[in-house]
Image (cartoon, rainbow, N blue to C red; front, side, top):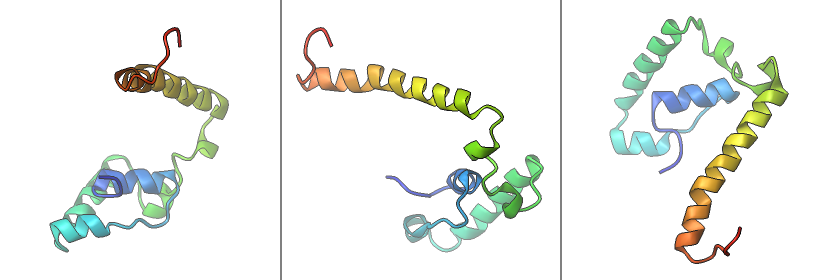
Length: 102
């Protein structure tokens, strides 16, 4: 199930640049009391990592803050290719859609 369900999901979204997140499914399944747990976990993580506010954290992991964005992009591309070669090719083989020699 996709979406934002945990404190880690919230932190990742905010650090990527989100100014808000929707957690309807998580709250519907866990109840409104789950909000307090999220606040505690997010606050604890922020304190441990020396963030003073959500505003300070917002976008902090955006590629624009990376000292070498080309290297980061290249690394992501290499990881994507590797995951495709090991994951998707096997799935295609199992589905008999992969031609010999590809």
